[in-house]
Length: 390
Ligand SMILES: [Zn+2]
Image (cartoon, rainbow, N blue to C red):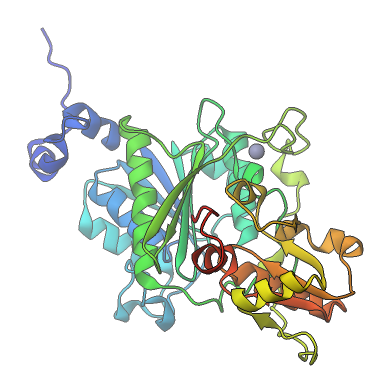
């Protein structure tokens, strides 16, 4: 009788022994990892930890897609690259680093990054896509291409101190990125990706979680984040796992899809636009007030509107009584429904998105727009503890 060829040699068995000792992985899970192929998009803050853990875990082939060069300010969080790599192609330093971590992993570099022209072809060559991109255009493109190619997408994103992780387009009908965020944010409402602050260690947390979700899918153990959005707030060290649903109206994965082909879609939005700074503060309406001041204003009854700019899944957790919900990305289409009379108090989760909206509205003639600092989280902490924090 012929013996079946051994997938892992003795050096690999020793290298991965701490995985193999885990009952949920074992030799069979480790073999699945070796036979798998993962595409990491972006060799940056999220792509660095994600790719390093996937390589160390023994994923057989890893693709790295990035078109950028290493810059000095990347080094605070992009651990694939070292000080001597400044000005080199990110894919080149990434390949060297990953190859050093694990010579058994084959590293393929795609130094044009992800474009509408190459996405479908690239995605078809991998089993799982890890999205470490930092802008909305690429995120929508990755989402659409992974859905159309039938590949699970491990989503991660960070903003200041908060991170989000999920798995989209998984087999079995999990929701997609568009189900959660139907509209890309309009130009000027989000900070330029290159200019927003980023907490380095948060990238390590979120990127490592993405690697972990990919490893679970590949080696088939544990419970996937498909159908859930994990939100990590590193300021309070609170994490929340929110349940998310497929949207039957989703233009990509809904019942009557209108996005059937990447080449017919436009993927040019938002991040290309510089955020504008606020116009002058009108005396009667400060740009921002705290929750106590907001409560006093609301109690006086002189408020035109209390505007909640969070996503519907967040409003379902709880909202301030009397508020109208218009998600941030839908504000530009709904300007006519917003009153210019009286104070217009605007809130979101922590006060970040609502400040962007406040700036945007002021640029569009709403001098009554006032941000509520700290958002509903501060409101819950200081005014009404019956509202669930998340
Ligand atoms: Zn969808």
